[in-house]
Image 1 (cartoon, one colour):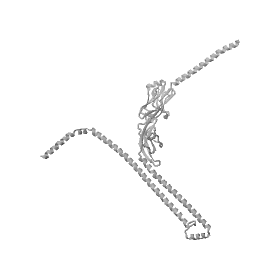
Image 2 (cartoon, helix red, strand yellow):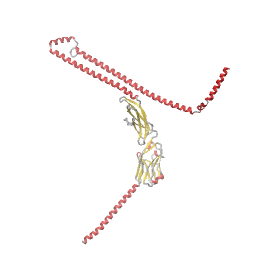
Image 3 (cartoon, helix red, strand yellow):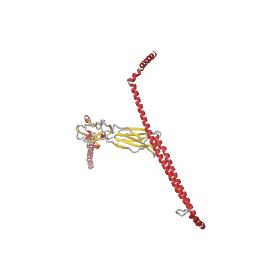
Image 4 (cartoon, helix red, strand yellow):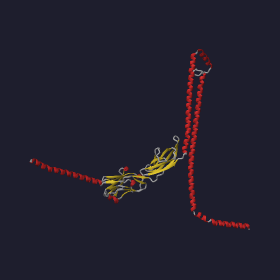
Length: 430
């Protein structure tokens, strides 16, 4: 009993010591992890969460700052762009700008807010923005091993509104082909066609041309059919810079009437040709069958009676024979059938000639309609111009001093005329 109690008394202090050692080790590791988390938390660079949109010639700021704030005035601060490899947009070491490693296109156009470096603000100011400045920028502090990104979109200030024109007439669908073109875009935009209710129309692929000034010209075509208002819209938009331009057009019903009036004539001609060919085939088939029946009957009669066959053979010597040696009268249906085929071919050719002449007249009518529409548009434009000139002249006349003075002089002038006329009458009476 005594030995067991001694062992128990020795084991209890050992267990207590083990618990204390494990507790101390855990506490030390937790503190170390906590300190590392605090240090990493002080080294987070924050940039812009939304793309930055600028217009050519603007001065902008690419935001970048530390959270929580700390003094970075003595550190190396780097600004780079993803498509420029290792060339710097801006480099600052211990508060001094390093110019010889900067990209040539950014020289004299970038700067930091030196007074705010102690608060952890390393935002970059970019002056006189160019189209080539668009891209993804990286803000970096190598010592803290932290970085952030800003994306810049540069829009041109010379975007032109879309121009819609009638490019062609679709004879197959009875519609009109519209073309839309817009110039001066950057970045590359998208083109959409809408009807009068705002519904998207199915259009062909957009053609894009990039000019030497890095500006894009886009064009698109769509085939439209007649609607109750014939109102169509071409919309050009750039989602990244939230820029939209659109133009509306109302197509005259005359462009659609040309197609609807010409299509029944063409369909009628095709139906007539098909019916004529079908009738000719049926007629030749029936005639061939009748000839076959006659040939079989004559052959049967020759085999049934001897005397009749002899007389028939004598008679056939005086009658014309065909190449097969049958009676001459069987030749005439063949000759008449060939003549009829020729007549039918002549009729078909005549119908085709008439169709060609109708197509020619139709094209002439279309050309006349287009010319008339263009004359009407030109006349309306001239009328509007004359109205504006007339209104301008009326305003100038109303505001000129001569017109004001002329309104006050008629009374005296009229009195002078009355006096002179009375004097002349007195002299005539004397």
